[in-house]
Image (cartoon, rainbow, N blue to C red; front, side, top):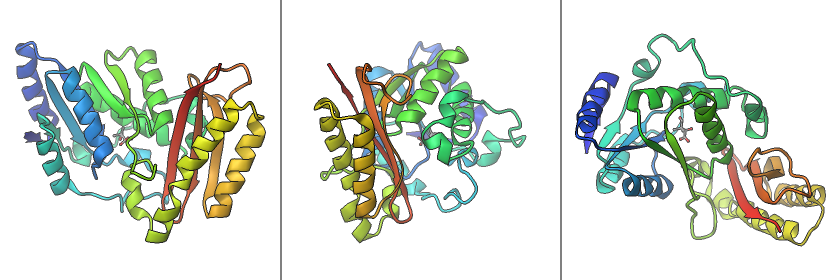
Length: 280
Ligand code: PAF
């Protein structure tokens, strides 16, 4: 695996690949890699001749009081995992490389950024959209891979490439879970042993809610009962919402393609998860 830290080095290598007619897949990450990230890499390797991974903890997507300073930075271990996964190129830029001019130009996401997580993390999705646009301009991949665990982020990025005519195909990859159902996340490491034992209840509630939707129970009742259940287990629920999977608006009884989105704090970390399914 080659490793570069500047945009110039990155572009030189990519230019050489392009000259040979090779296709390029891109997996942007913030590091602290787990099996979910490696699954993205594996999918990327199936779809392109070369795979580029970036590790960059992006300050513009963290709000005041969030964990930017303490976000786990585990570059050495991450590099080993990426080498083992046969990644071709690791891009490890500094903050100055990505934001040399304090980035006064931003990508503004619009309505989708105000929903769900956006309502609790002001400016978060604009920060994600800005850095992903910049990384796309630097790497210029044919195809890029994102985890479905961050369902709203994936929707934001899909909208963004469409709205801004960015010529990159976006692929979502299904969530990697621990044996007990907990969605893998870099922030799971913040859980205490006691909280870790409770955490799988988030996905259990999603599965139960999906079954209740399919048994045609009223959406509002399902949302309320499952939020109350999670609160009784020790979660602080931001939202538990049954939505239209295409536009992420609250679902109506006529919607067929559905996603249930949940975000809840458990001790220090705020966990998010979702479940998608179709209704007849
Ligand atoms: O999902 C993430 O890890 C980040 O939001 C991303 C897409 C790498 C942008 O910083």
